[in-house]
Length: 329
Image 1 (cartoon, rainbow, N blue to C red):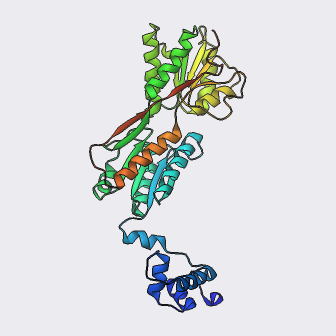
Image 2: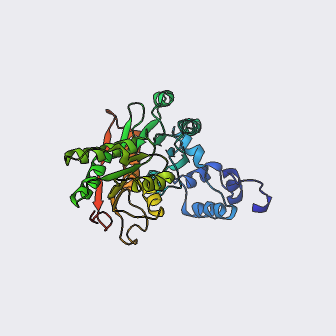
Image 3: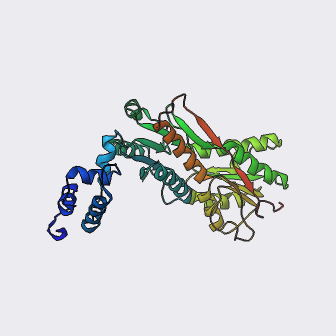
């Protein structure tokens, strides 16, 4: 009989193959009582023989849910965001849901298109790493019952938000360099206007102010990570060069390391092989998996009916000394 079925086998096909009523197959598939062991075994054998799979979409839609959530990150190729994505998937699977994900590429228009595409597919909730600050387009979706959590950066409207301690982490990293005798410390960060880049620059300036050191704007460069190496070379060629560098994220750190010269360095974000270089790279490590997990758990609590004011959760960072940040001037 399996050879005569075209397309996906249905419960009707299973019922015909097992010689039972359609309702009996439904009871077996959904784990309901009222089926004898012998009949249950006959239905199970027919399901196996035909390769029948239950239509999960129809089942969850009957419950008013699609069992999917949407995740919009900056770039799935970035290891930081890959860890966030994996953590969200792990939490979603525990709740019987799947994750639809996409990369905004720091483009607010693309973020909006992705979010609305996910909403058109009736996702139950959204986790968004914002590419911009305008999120009025989300209001109709939230009013319709879609839950949303902003991760890594705040969004442009009142909603649950999970961040890391960007200011405190940068302050700690720069203070570490100051503690090892450095007075002229360069800051190389991502593009101006990105929340995390601006917050880490604020932490850098705070550490200098607390140490009574002047903030020399010639030692600050914000821009695409791939340009960080050239920016550092220009600083090092100046008459009064920096003696140490603080880098604002993992991609900037890697770009600086590839540039050749390696002054004393502390980087924000840990990265693979940082401990295997000579010297190892001292970093301010955040927890991207924890960030993704916290955002997803918060989302599913909302989907389960938790109400109350929007939460803002800030996760701590930690300094990981490995050698590059402990070098003297």
